[in-house]
Image (cartoon, rainbow, N blue to C red; front, side):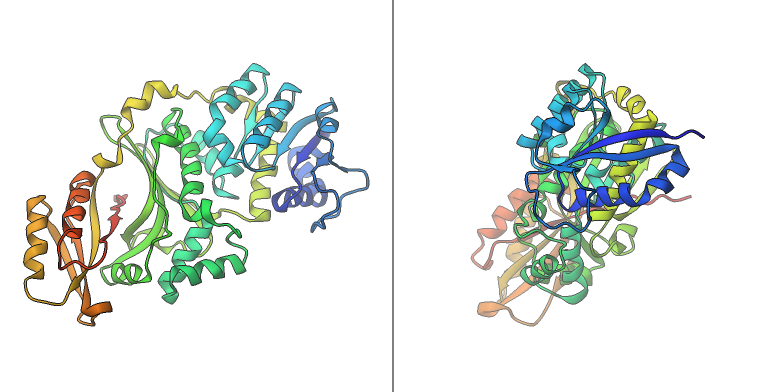
Length: 440
C-alpha cells in the first residue's frame, strides 16, 4: 500500500500539545503501517519558544508565527490546543479560512461558540473534529455520532470531570474533607492551581452541551444547563449518604422524556452504590447512555491527561486524513436552538428524590415541627437517619430522604425548614438520581 503524506500544523505546545507531538514523532511508522498515512509535523506554533517540554522537536519546527501554518498550502490539518475561547476562536476561524481542516480539544469554545464555528467550517468546505473535547481518551463523540446513530437516545449520565471525581472519591474512601481532597488533587496534578472551572461544574457543563447536542440532534446552549458544583459538599453528607446506601458523584445528566422534553443539568448526585457509575473512582471518567434499541451502554476510561487526550486528538487527525470526518461533519445536522428552546425543562420542573440534612436543637418537638413543614408542602419521607452524637452547640444531624417530588416543592420546603427556630444551620439538599437499570 502506497503511503499518503499528511502534514499537520499544531498550535499550542503545552501539556497536551507535547503529547500529540510525541505520538506523531514516535509512532509515525506504526500509524503508517495500520492506516497508510504518514503523519508529519510541519510546524508547531506557540508563544513561548524557550519553556522546557517533555518532548524534543526537530530543529526549526517550533515557531511563534501563526502565519507560517496558515500560509503553508501543504498543511491540510490544523490542530488547535490553545484553550480558552477568544484567541482560540480567532485561530480556528483563520485556519478554516486558510483551507485547513481543524482538530481541537477545546470544549469551552465549542460549547459557547460551536454554531458559529460549524457554520464557518461548512462555508469553507472544511470540517472540525473534536473527539478529545469531552472525555479525554474515551471515544465518546464517535460512539454517539456513529456507533449509536440508529438509536433514539433517551438519557445520558456522565462522570466527565476527573478533578471532581478524584476529590469525591477521596472524600468517600478516606473520609477527607473537601479542602484536603482538593489539595491532594492539586499535588498529584489532577487539579489546576485555580480549580474553579472544574469544581464549579462549569467544565462538566461545557462537555454536556457538546454531548447532548449530538445525542439529541439539536443545538444546545450553556443557558439550557442547570449547573451546581461540589464546593459546598461536606464529608458528613458523603458519610451519611453512604450509610443510607448511596455514593456521591458529580453527574452531567441529559434526559429526554416521551413527550420530547429535555432536562440538562450538572450537580452533585447521590446514586446507588450498586450502580456501575458508583464504582468509577479517582480521575477516571464514565458515561452511561440509554438508547431505545441498544439499551444501556457504558463508556469508561481516562478522561484527561497528556497522553489519553493526545490519543484522541491523533485519532481525529487520522479520521480527517482518511476523509471520514468530512463525511460525518457534513452530515452533523443539528436543529437550530430556536426550534428546541421551548422543549428545555427548567430545574424547577425536575421530579426527583432528595436527601436533606438538618442540624437541629436536641430537644423535644423537633420532629413535629419538621413534619408539619413537610406535610404543608406535600413532601413524603422515604427514610430518616439520626445520630445520637451531638454536633456544635448541642445540635444533632437529622437526615431525611424523600419520595419523588418536584424541585420547586422542595425549594419551598427548604425555605420553611430554614425558618424554624429549632433548625440551626442552612439545610443541605442533594438530589438522589435513580439511574434506570437495563434488565432482560
